Length: 321
Image 1: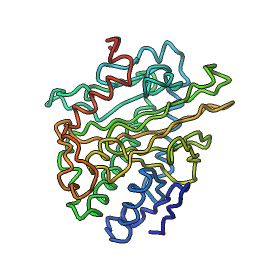
Image 2 (image 1 turned 180 degrees about the vertical axis):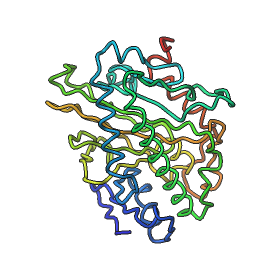
Image 3 (image 1 turned 90 degrees about the horizontal axis):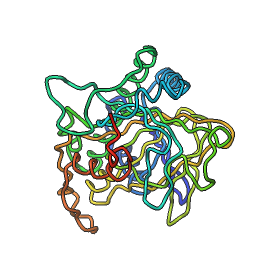
């Protein structure tokens, strides 16, 4: 694993080649730990997800977003947060305008032997007339979730914890995948100060992101100092979410980030948000040596429910299917 430079305005690049092969090397894990503690945002290379997986998933995303409005509306977001979320359906904070993006969201297939016990688990919605979309989407979900679990195992070991520390209750995780579409400013006129995604921190444990070549992602380094996170060939973005920050008692950073709307071309991103089972107790009992005050415990399901109710309009209006 190559060295990672952690400078004032440099997003770390971490080589996962040995970790992906299942080899846990202390020096490698220390570099990973440094990246999440200093930035909470990093590029990962040699991550084990094939070019064909990413290419096919991006093509299937465009198949979906290139449909008519009526076809997308037929799969409007469900009460289980599955399906199409229109532009304006998400608002990351009360003091910013709604996001100028569309999303298509799915998760692990619902096991009919275990009825849903949380609002973020339910049946997926797939367009029947686009059967070729389903397979690449599922492959992206499986590969990105596997990578997220591997990273969490590596992070746990870097803190001298068992590799399963963050994954002890993850047989029925609340992970979600999404395709995200950012129309150009030319195609979709909005207010100048309206972002593709407004400034926010991610809600859950760990996010895996594949950008396309367009760019627009920015991360806050210091107060109101925004730096670009440009696309990097063969690299994915990984970032810490609020639950992992809380779980580590603030050792790992959940950085604010945003997406600037593209000017004259559109943009498609692939996302995986990893979260364990809803009953998982987020308790930083093994991180109390950190001087930051220990937050109150909360379950993963409770926290995500609270954050989703604040961010997504359909949760407040009851308009979901």
